[in-house]
Image (cartoon, rainbow, N blue to C red; front, side, top):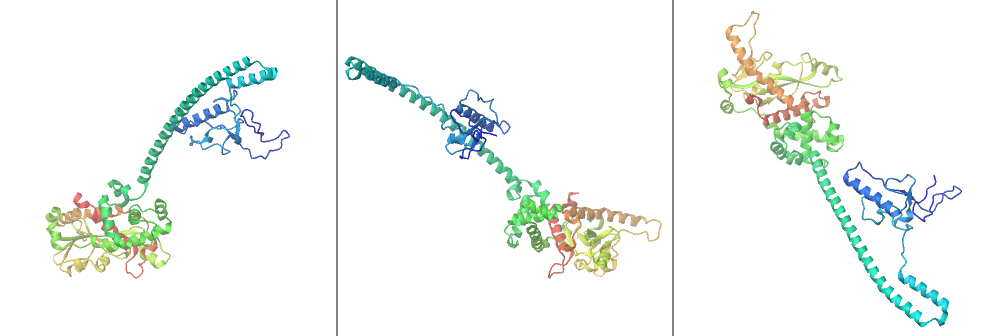
Length: 495
């Protein structure tokens, strides 16, 4: 299609009359569009620019609402050979301004007098009447005075118009700058709220609870302060706060590694390495929070319902729970880890609670086919008991003889032992034990609810012993989760 410039007296075309393309470097540009859907500021700016182009071209057939796609302006009418960016209203090429073909040069009185004088001299020659020349001179002086006054008025008028236009442009420019600054500030605030850093969690305890399981930001920063000197510095891609946060998010929400990598804009390997290293550091520093309290501490803080039922002798309430793991390829390991109770492959852990609901003991993982009695006798729990202590357990814990060796006592719900029903004494004692052991399910449920990684299926790589240690990575994860749970308000005391 042949393109042509719409400016008056401009004959630039893209092709000659024979249809051959003219390669003279001239480009053609369409009139700017009025963008009404991008906000009031852009709409007003683009409307002014379109009107300015129409005014600059000054053709009767071109109006604001009557501009076809073929109405073009060539590069000859711009200082830089092309229109400026639409936001640069102060740029000389915001509107075409060169060779527009309608520069009006008004005939001045000086020109008329000079032309008349030349004609008179041509007719009369050197013998022209002096009177006529004097008259012409007087008319010339008067014309000069009038022309000077007219030029001064015109200059003043042009200066005033230019100043008004400049003031208008400045005010529009200032308004646009202020709008952009405000938009920039707002977007920075929105970005800061979406970042996973200290500022985004500082005043939002609900957000801290959701992502970490800890009740408040102050406690989260306390944990970070405790771990900070020993956090691994092998990777500089994540600051210490985000190292701890990403680890807690994986424990709390059981998020996939790749999902966390996207959240923190790092690669998958960085998240995986950070998780393992941070769990190792947390295990070393938070393990003391899962401790067996002294007897006098237990007695001083014994809840009244335990005192009413068994005095101040209760030292621990024990139970076992299982964590699902992947099915291994080894047939022997597969048989040892299959749980007939869960109908899945699991590892079994013995967990102990104080009467106030804090976790005081956690064993290593055992294959699910191992009995509760065997786990209790070989996990080290009996070494914590003192003579006279009372242990509350479930029916599966046949550990009376083992506990009796340390001069302690175990209370479990009574069996019917072949009888049709229990006697009144056994019924009452069983009711009291069941009423107090209900807290076991609540505490275990609290740990698994706060840190849902324990509810998922754990990969086999986590149940293998760590290098140079007798504990598995899952053992460390469970210990860390129990320590973090102990930092939160007790579910037993809430009830």
